[in-house]
Image 1 (tube, one colour):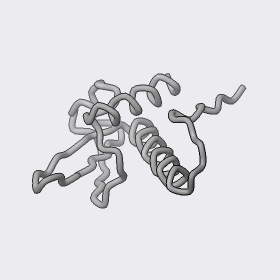
Image 2 (cartoon, rainbow, N blue to C red):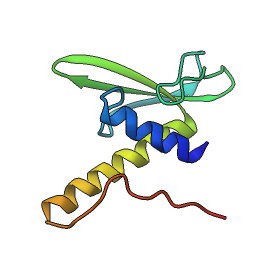
Image 3 (cartoon, one colour):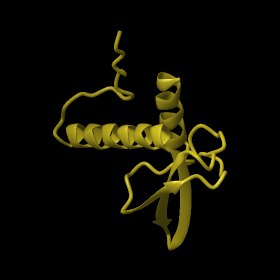
Length: 103
């Protein structure tokens, strides 16, 4: 499911369903049975949940993630930031960057 999560994160960032930048406000705790903003599965009460708060045009928005989904989203945000910095320097970078697989 790892590569699928990365692909899904890239798609949701691209179409605006997830923010493209890491945020300042992130909260963690046990799940409240909310739906994960990345995988669309329920976050059970015995699972860790990350809640990310963003503000855009004065409007607050919250996203909830499983631990793995949050880490995946952060990874994709980081890749976008790296790509943007390399593009400013004139480097040729293709996005999405290949996902490393471990055997």
